[in-house]
Image 1: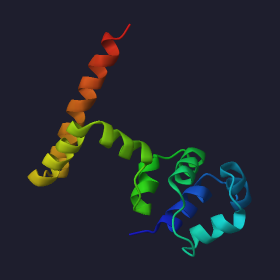
Image 2: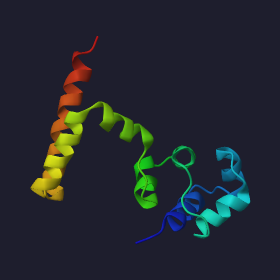
Image 3: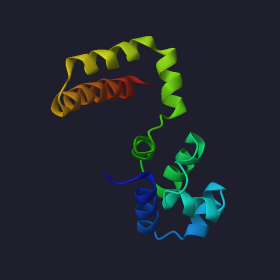
Image 4: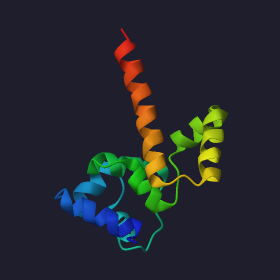
Length: 120
């Protein structure tokens, strides 16, 4: 499995962003970004991870998974919505397959679409 730094470097290069350019966009030093990419520093704070994802136009959850961190917005949501935590616990205990989780996700998206279409 690729590391956070390896993936970050690959995404940056794919976007044709130089180290200095990207560091400037996320307001960190190029030296710090280089150390992160080389695995000399641990993944940065959640705020920096989100900024990196925005600059690289990738889903922040990709970087959060690699960093072994959780987006604070997700953590706050889970605290505010205990039923969601219970749902996650149920999914975990049921040992749902990827296919099962995709079906649950499709169901939730369908509900979201219904809400969007019924909104004024």
